[in-house]
Amino acid sequence: MLSRMLRLHPEVLSLSELFSTVRARHPFDGSPDGAGFWRMLSEPDPAVDTMVTAGLTVSELIYPYATGRFDPARGVPLICHMTLPMLTDDPDALYDELAAEVPLWPVRPIAEHYRQLFTFLAGRCGRPVVVERSGGSLSLLPRLRDAFPDARFVYLTRDGVDSALSMSRHAGFRLMLMGRAAARVTGVSGPEQLGPAQMPLLPPEVGRMLADPAELPRLMARDVPVTAFGALWSEMTREGADELLRLPGDRWTMLAYEHVVADPRGQLSRLAGFLGVPANRSWLTAAAGLVDRDRRGASSRLDTRLRAALRRSCAPGTAVDAVLAAAAGVLLHVPL
Image 1: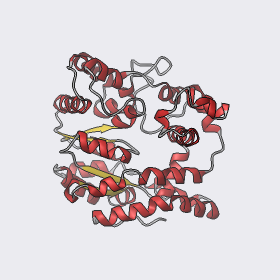
Image 2: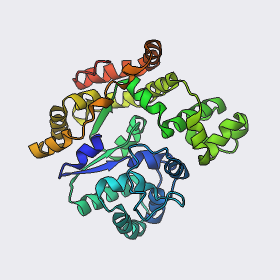
Image 3: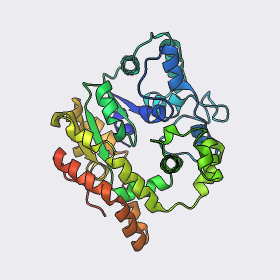
């Protein structure tokens, strides 16, 4: 929702889910040449393609699959699923421009490649302020701070119970939940470290689901307690929070999803001030029109005992949110 709101601002280049898609398969360091960097951005991801072909689509996947050039059955370039369609109504044409440009770039640190990519897209789209928004990216903060020392950061949070309920219905978060559990069982630092050596240590069914994207529909059909996603939300919320608190106060701010839904004009005006762009009336009106108030408080329809259990599983993350809110000087959402 926030990416779509920012997309409507004439001065903002709204990059949606760029880092979240790339980081799952590539490190955020190294010094590739332009061709190597372009492969990172453009190689299809079988898991994402399977989500589309199996009908497990989520709101972030906005490529025009019915009319676009790329077919998920054969592989859609990674950057086309979410990032390029947020920038233009013709993502295939913009993809072609990047395909002709990026592979020509020289060998250099990956952060410099990203900065050049931002510069190219900002000039191409005529939008000088770049905002990259990736869900669940708090753990990237140390690397982002080092790679982009002049950047400012917006921490967008949502009530943990509602977040966990949404995550439980999302194929990507289900895969993340299983990957993190497998990493703990096999003793590696994270899902990205799982490889052939770890698979024999896992139950065969789990190994198959992690190794074969075609298993995603079966993963979605598994009965997974929603409280597991509450614990995952807490874990993700706690990752990087200390790093956020180490930033100077003028380098970061905090938004609560519930506040944006309840008062989009007020919250977006505050965000615009932080970004250094005008909060003109036409943008605020258009952006406010994207709010779906029915999404707020979805967990209130859960059984009372299940909701209480889910809130307990979210308690560690909720406590971290309260600390961050106090540091940012904002009122946190009140659970419904």
